Image 1: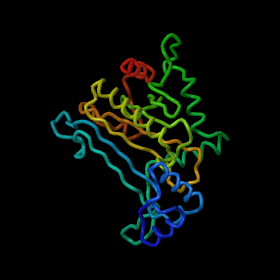
Image 2: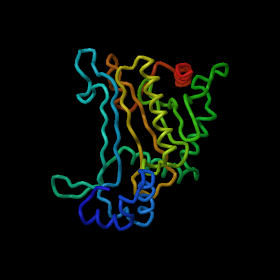
Image 3: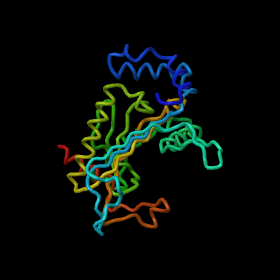
Image 4: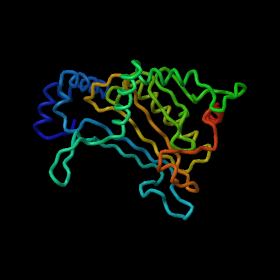
Length: 260
């Protein structure tokens, strides 16, 4: 676990020497145990960033939309607990998963129910957006005991797909081998489906909790967003309003047909 020498040494007191671990599974469990014993307060880096770009990114003009988009480009990093600005003031460091953490805490305070429990129930019992009772209403593309691959009811772009853990797995350290294997398979299926539909460039983003956060009800989410070269972002999207040309239930049906 990266950090300054003092912090790294202090955190190491909570776990056994790494050479004793037969595999990463055991190491991950040891880190979780150390965090539960209070080791997290010593971490300089307490969050993870994962992003994945797949495909070529040429715009209508012939220029790439993002410089890093070239076939497969993966980014992994640890996020610091805090940063210092140009005036010397120390500020909390932002990660996109923090938005999920804040929201689910507010939701549970208002509704007295964990958000992700309600979210999975709503997905399982989804009613079609257009109210048509004769058409398929499911948003789920693939599922197993550990994960769900689905079309979000309110996507942030056309063809967005999401992968989510079924159980309370707030970050990758809390994911055991079975969950990680299920995530790998769901991620593969998501990209295969989008490529079959014609997406030439896909961005994947992980939204997870901080390692030392006391938020047991958070689930990891992976969002897969196709970049449309002939449909660049608009003013409405800058106002957090997205317009999609297909109902999410219909997209989910097409994706299921691709996988079968």
